[in-house]
Length: 242
Image (tube, rainbow, N blue to C red; front, side):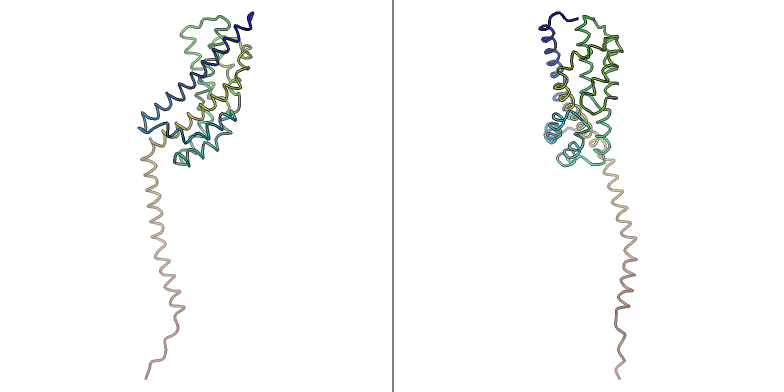
């Protein structure tokens, strides 16, 4: 129970700041560093091409609603192969909720602190694992993380009724974690395209060779048909001059 509303407001403010800092560290440091280490390309140029998708995610608070814009940004701005985006992005919008996982873990720890419950190392590990698993099952719609957070709280015996404590700020944090989710999906698509570049090029070469072979097979028949048409259209030979 809360006796001091002012104290609770301060704790909620610190919780909000902590979530924002965590999402910023993940989105500005960890994901770009991972992209650079694997691809050796400037991650911020890649992220610049995603600005429209990130703004849409911030406004809609839904990674599923942002999906068409994410397709456009990756394929037109960052020139990511369509074969990669059409597979990675729908899967990522369903299960790759890294921002949601971070949010749910911090929310569970916050609720434990509000209830004066000390979490041991094993419980923190349990929260991390269940938050990751719960984020996979979260739908790509606004505030879906609040529903799956029940799993995280139940795993360590925290009261599920205290989810109401964070509803006041969840509308804002939900937009930020959705933006992080979209960024994570896009970075993942860029990395997968880089790792699959040789295979994609070999597939393109095979398709190119098959097209050439198909054209070569059609070419003789076209020449024969053209020759027959020419013979049919040629006027009969004139009489031999005496």
